[in-house]
Image (cartoon, rainbow, N blue to C red; front, side, top):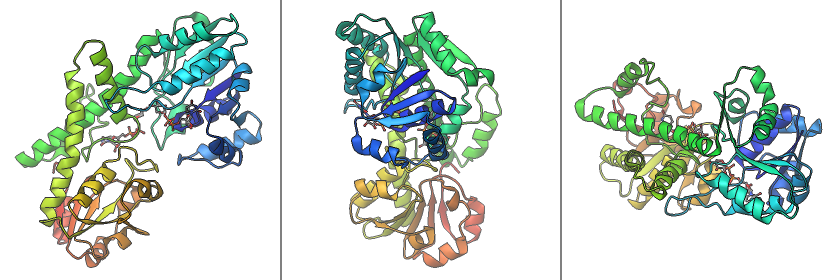
Length: 433
Ligand code: UDX
Ligand code: UDX
């Protein structure tokens, strides 16, 4: 089977490399010639554990290739995955211009039956839109099917998530398209992965509903944490006890500065927007988004309370990415918090194991990037733990205390024990404890 993946971003690249590893012939296309050149040279533009090994192996064994020739790639493939970006517009709606552009290109290169699959997260109705574009603009009268096959990959464990998914969702109108996609995923079928086969609209909603529910859990526990602070309770014990109820489950109940990244913020906004367009006000989603936004301000207030006046202080920031094990800083709470602190005239020293290069593109030049956590701590009025990278979990706190100008630590990810920190003489604050 020949498969073409259009768009070699996060999702496209992981999908392409994993399908190739299943033994399928995969061509990954992107209009960004520079990116394709780097990929051909074996350079991986993103930080994703295990991805380079997978790309190298499948390039070497000839099942994976990279090109900018989108027309040729479509013509030689039975299945075309659309994995181009679907960026949010200012109002939270989704910009589908790239998906539309690719659909037109598919139409003009339709040289036989093909299955056109959306991998990108797209609003409900996009499957129909693609069908319409291809039907109206195809040069030759070949048959085709459109399908929705959303991804549920987490950054930092995307390869593992692809190879061991909780479920595969296939939305299509036609048995043939379903059969072809099932065949593509047959290695996972053998591993007893549950398949949910449904219509396109349902598949499109499943993706948003899943991400929106994860976001809801996070905003919920953050509000419980805010309540715990006021009541003198411990949110971790609350979360643990809640999680033991199997109907609730223990995951995604970790309090902190709120969710970030390229998916949850975008998808929650998009779902609220989709609902609005269908004449339904999704109040819960609006609240989830609102709570998440406000949580960042509460974290800045927490830091302000810990140091007194922010003006003229030096704040050390550990972590810049939206979560550990990625170099992604999109919608990162750490970056937002840094911006707010800078606005209040604090000087920022920062360290992140993977995100400094990306962060330096969006943060003001006044930020000092350090070589490790100890380098950050030196001379600071407060050390803020913004992302829970493993290397921040077991810092030599005696040494940190000696380096700080004042022994103030604000732990936004709750990775240290409050009693222990206070015993050591720190003025220690965390979230919901
Ligand atoms: C994806 C999905 O697009 C998004 O819907 C989902 O929610 C998260 O994952 P990602 O893979 O991170 O996003 O996208 P991005 O990194 O923006 O990559 C898209 C790639 O497609 C880029 O390399 C871009 O150059 C390429 N592209 C875009 C094309 O090749 N052709 C186009 O017309 C547009
Ligand atoms: C998410 C979904 O998990 C994935 O299924 C989907 O396909 C893409 O979006 P990702 O964006 O990689 O994946 O990050 P994830 O690990 O889900 O974390 C999202 C954000 O939530 C991070 O900023 C993280 O710090 C935060 N988070 C997560 C919490 O604050 N508390 C939690 O308990 C869990």
